[in-house]
Image (tube, rainbow, N blue to C red; front, side):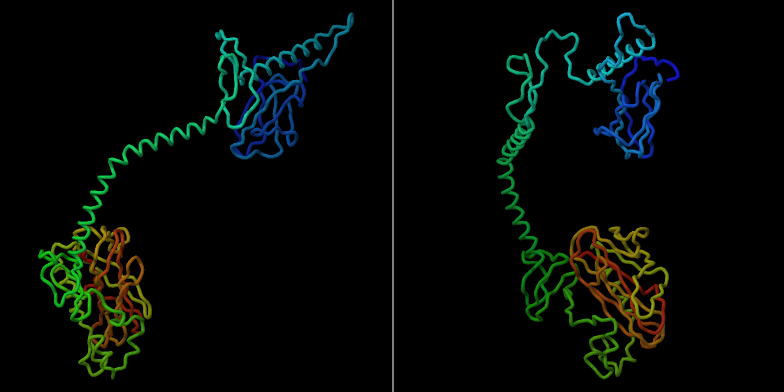
Length: 443
């Protein structure tokens, strides 16, 4: 010590929250020896791993840790001077001021330690007139402290207050549930009956059962609704009402070519194979010309026939390159019609995303700008998965194309895209004006 320390009115305890990098922490109170400083990391008293500097200095000093405590650790520095006499004055012996000052300083330090301890203790206020004991009973698991029946001391509760509160809350909730159950039971029964009748009527309006020919009214004699279905017992096929006409409800797996190179397997001499792609009258496949104008007519007819039915129709605004022997998702759409707002030109512009669940008609067509012979195909995808595809053949005309149509149930948020594929020998562009995608809600 350079001079005798001064014991001011200062708390013998300070806390810090570690930042994960600092290792030195100030203690702003004097200590006599390094052993007088206790270091806690959270609740753990440290017995090693740190050094103390500044013992005997009025302003205090530093506790320096060997390793920085983790971020968020509470660092507590406390002065703890032993409650003992370290000197004894002899009768008639020398009376040295420094010795008596040091002893008095140690006494003041002990008093400050007691004050700090008391500040964190349970005390009655100075104005209290009670003489009740504050002595704690022995701990008991799951019990709370309470004043005893006489009010003159503390005791443990008879039960677990947390369990009692939980049970009380459960009872309140159960009572509320029982009170409303009787009122809702009758309403639920009546609603269930009404829903059942409505569901049956709705189903009866949409599935008309077996008929020998296309019906002109539903089973109640009312006008047909778009999306209605019936089984034609004469042809053995399901039929779908689009809102203006009856059409085939689906195409069987045998009704289209389901592999990219299927056209290469068709023999020019096979009349059945030529018939399956609409070329029964051709002498060989070189005479098969894909009528792209027919694809455009299908789309235009669909848009006209849809009337008040929600629909979205897109056409390519610019030609798109399709690599040889590979498929490409068709993009660059511009809107021909989109009353329900299913197409977003900014977000996922290659998609048509429906807003409501229902039965939808999906159709797409594409043309390849080449006069060379080769294979072409168009695909419909629902949520990125192929649901329908059809192949065609470019036979040396100005360009060749193909189209595909499907009727499917869609959920709200489902999206439709189209892909084009070609195998003509090199990359070729689409014909933008005849590359289209449309979706119509039937019911």
